[in-house]
Image 1: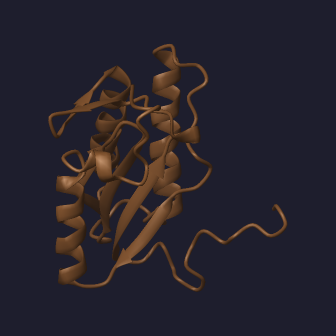
Image 2: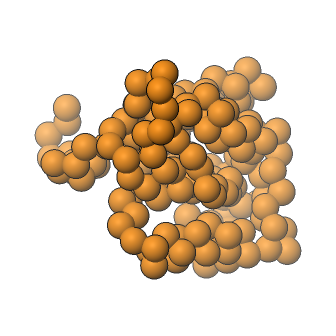
Length: 161
């Protein structure tokens, strides 16, 4: 582990228990590889379609979770992931393992499509959703993200051309 590296997960929190999380993961160097936003709508290219398809794969593959909302943006993804634990046959995987599986599958498929140097940022942002108010605000943020792309902290005119 690198010295002086900021811990990325919440200290003392068990990421394998029933909880709801808001996730953001960005492409390395904030490269816009998933498509473009035009007139407030995200237009996915083939790489963006892979990123979208893998959210569906994740929720279909793991019976103990649901993904109430997600959005693929030009250089990042947002999702709400609910680990509910309702399963009789699967071991519940903690959030870091789920995000690792998602990012690995997206990376492998995008590289198969020809973008051989595709990489995610090393980590990801997570936020524990603690109440309905927070959930509704995050849900609206995800829905509005394409429309507000030019105001996004990850937006760069240079990278979006």
